[in-house]
Image (cartoon, rainbow, N blue to C red; front, side, top):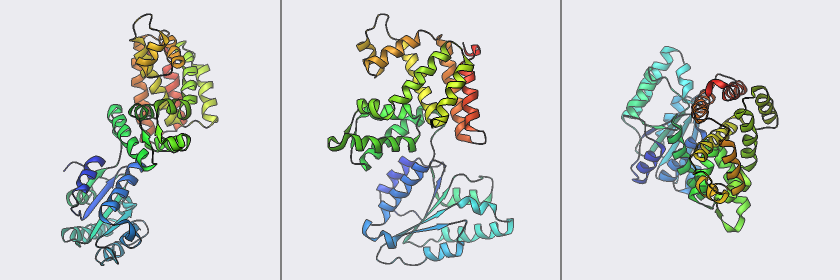
Length: 347
């Protein structure tokens, strides 16, 4: 069975039927935490979670201790949820120890305690190994990760932004959610951090608008990338790399800067599609920006050949994949990208 999405898991939890084993698989921390929280909410009443929710580590605790807890009736709670983190540690066991563990865990999942839900967590597992195959066959696997497809990632981040806002006690307007999703390229942790700032900013108004996002959350980063746009349009790689270095030294995070660049390239493409002679207010309405920013986008868009923008956007998506895959210096990824964007080969 294909892994469930977080939304599909939440739909299944609403039905209330216990699931003996769940594997939260993926490196997106916010999604894992969201799923874990919803699982606890679904199965254990809030007042008894001190007794009904237990946490173990596969790296530090024995499987016997974990299964012993699963087979012990919880105190004061009709059902218990047991979280097991670091499951990838079991892959690093010797062959004999790992095979014995798979047999023991598989036997439990074939005949689970009716009052326990085991939730396993791992960034990744080798699907070719017996452990990974056993989890695929005997647990509900949930993909706690964002899609590699930019549109799908943005769609999920946009939907989850509403969930984050509700948790913070504020209402998030649709276009504000879209703005956050675009500017942070679907980075859920960054979106959550910005929403916390926005919730404090709007105070008793308890409603976050696009104007609030423009003003507080991302305006400085956007203007930084507009400065960079001038260097890219005029194909000045040395100057662009110096500017990138200053941004990184000032604390800009590569993933968030990349998201801002992708946002800018999309807006430049949209600006090129505006009718000739469009006023600042017309451009602002079509581009979803304040008039001054919209006028800046229109001016900058005239300096780029369209092929440079479309190929640049493809290069940005490739860089995003490299950042998320790890194994390469984030600074090196950004330096290569900026040099590529300023190169005449993209024109």
